[in-house]
Amino acid sequence: MSPASPRDWRRNQAAVTGASFIGFAGFTLVMPFLPFYFEQLGVESAGAIAIWSGVSLGVTPAVTAVMAPIWARVAERVGRKPMVVRSLFSFVVVMTATAFVTAPWQVLGLRAVQGLFAGYGPVALTMAAESAPPHRTAEAIGLVQTAQRLGPALGPVIGGGLAQSLGLRNTFLVAAGFFAAATALVAVGYRESARSRPAGPPPAGTMTFATFRRVPNFVLFMATVFGLQMAERSFGPILPLFLREAGMASERVPVLAGIVFTVSAAAAAVGNQTAGWWLRRAPISVLVPAAAALSAVAAAVFGVAPSAAVLMVAAGLFGVGIGVATTSIYTAASLSVSAEKRGLAFGYLTTAYLTALALSPVVSGLIGSLSVRTVFFVDAVGLAALAWAVRRFVQAGHPAVEPR
Image 1 (cartoon, rainbow, N blue to C red):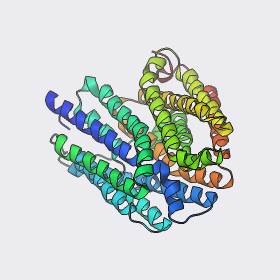
Image 2 (cartoon, rainbow, N blue to C red):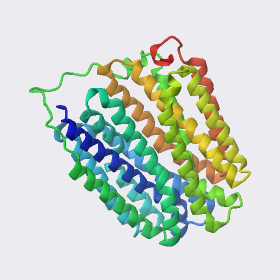
Image 3 (cartoon, one colour):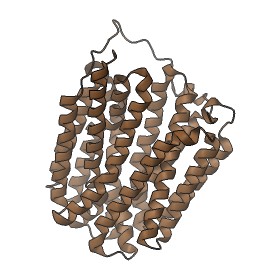
Image 4 (cartoon, rainbow, N blue to C red):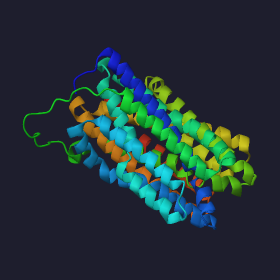
């Protein structure tokens, strides 16, 4: 893609950053409260609610992971902007339709349909990077990542209040309005440069997963991304049920759950932003295990649930640890490969991320159907094991894992 003019790249940056923030906020207006929606639709037992919620939250990224290569090929022909507009508008349609469902299977079906068109988040990162001057690429990506963290930090608080005042059905309509605004922002605000196309067919690819298996630490980096996302996304299907089980008043649960999600997401954004500072002072082999261990301790505190105030502190510590570890791993992976391999390398990391995004709510819902509290202890054990694996197996001496 030809570089954008200085004015256009700032305009483009504002468009994709703003759309990412609005879209991610709109999604979290309603999704944290999906268990209550299933309850309104007639699902009675806590176990059944957890399963319906987990499967419904997991089916979209599962389908998206399958569709991603297809849409990527389409984007090479028509450009990335139409792909993001298409994806955002699909959320307008699905969120509106969800407000009028009458049975749990209809929610699940709509979430599956959503997976056919979702995936605007990673494409927005690519659009920001391609539009920015080379020396501003890291800044462009960082701003969009921060927006994708802060949107979920704000969304649950607004959504909790809307659910209490307007009801969950109407909150889905408000979420559709958010996505309509994000769609318009990209459609009007982003200017995609003319794409250069090769005259003939693209050369046969020489880079496969076997190429990256030979890169020091890369498979471990993929596994770490997967494990961190499994833990981070496990709260969605069970947190509202857990808070009620822990003795919180039913009328306070939506707002309290929204605040917990917000604290965790905001703290993760802080972790994302401060990871670079930490990376200049500690190697990956120390920093990632320490961050994962911090999140493991916080998850265990959640399982004990001593009080609402302590839960807020634990949510903050959990988010910081996840944020630092995630950004550190992506940075190390980027430094592990040459520039021409970096795009494909991030594609494999995205596959690990989407796989965890799909599996985590399903596994969390299944565990939660037996014991909601157990989910947090499983997270704690998993994160502790991840910390040990990185500390034990990461290869020292590689430029990607040494402080700079």
